Image 1: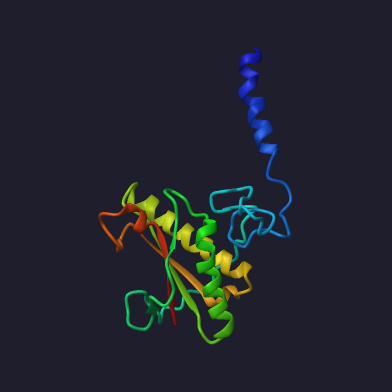
Image 2 (image 1 turned 30 degrees about the vertical axis):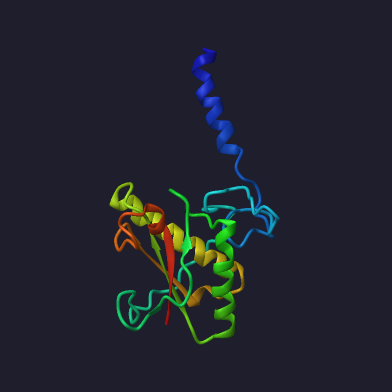
Length: 179
């Protein structure tokens, strides 16, 4: 009898032992931490997708601007790189996001398109979703750094358009396009 109740009891414990209240000082990099701590560590660890992250509603897509057209300026900023199967922004990559935020604060007429990419490990569907999570993590960090969400759009190419087909790490990235 006790053996049959154990799975039910564990399910109930995990269902009601949620993450708790949202921290008002959440880490703008989507890690769910309590601020900018020295080590950058924070609760959720893998992107803060949920209670700990700064997820905001996406603006309507401005179809006049396309990643592959000439009307989006790419290459103005360094790419943000991610670990394998991760979408949190590592401490070493945060300065890149801060540079973009600084530029956008000084150039209020500019908007940003963030494209998320992955390596070729996994299904195309999974990689498309992971690329979107990466782009969203960068967008959330920019919003946390004071950039209005309606100036930042995201898209995902997943494993398409690899930076270097032979180098998995080089393909786990988010790129910026200005318009």
